[in-house]
Amino acid sequence: MRGGELTDFLDGLHQVARDGGDLSAAGAADAARLLHLDALTLSLYSARGVLELLWADRADPLGTALEDVQYTLGEGPTLDAARDGCLVTETDLSAAPADRWPLFTSAACRTPARSVIAIPLFLGLATVGVLTGYRTTPGPFPTGQRQDLARFAGTALDLLLRTPPQSLASGTDGPALHRATVHQAAGILSVHLGMTINESLLRMRAHAWRHDLPLLHVAHDITTGHLHFDPED
Image (cartoon, rainbow, N blue to C red):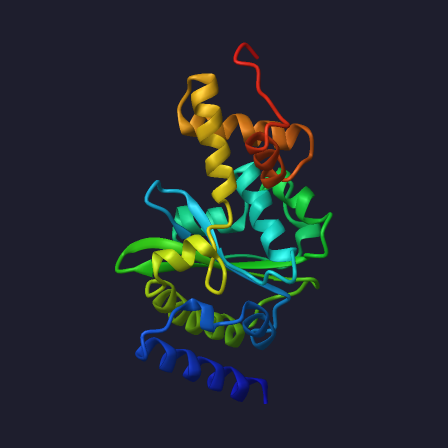
């Protein structure tokens, strides 16, 4: 029955694409349920070569939180899939090798997530993004589930590429630039500290990791003037 629901769901999205629609037509919660997952995210490379989280279930913070952890720590399945252009899975995060993602695994195990699958998205030979699914139970990802994820990944990328820039910026109905505040804060630090944007991002990530804070929390404190960095530090 679930397979029929998934086929109907994908057929509906294909029609949306033919009608000129975008990714706002695909509910992340519905997609995750039909794909036997508890959270599903889609990230795309920006013009700066940084993975931007553009699509997730806003009502459930699990997927968003795990993507933010990877962005802060600089390691994890989404980043591996993007860098290597290969499928990445971990069937039991609590038993993952200690040297695979030493920081991410520890952080992920403080959430309900116990298994993850990350599928690179391609345009021709180029990796342009990643679709990442999380489950709250350990266990393998069967071949049929992987095939269904690949089918959805292609459809989602097609819809995302049709999403107008204003929808990405507003985040009202369509995908949002989830880390817009992070980039704004990096710009402020860049001016204040006299360093590049990338160096500013590294300072912010280090602060977030050191104080066990979400990077978005650090960025918000910078943009609102509640957090200042010493240029001499």
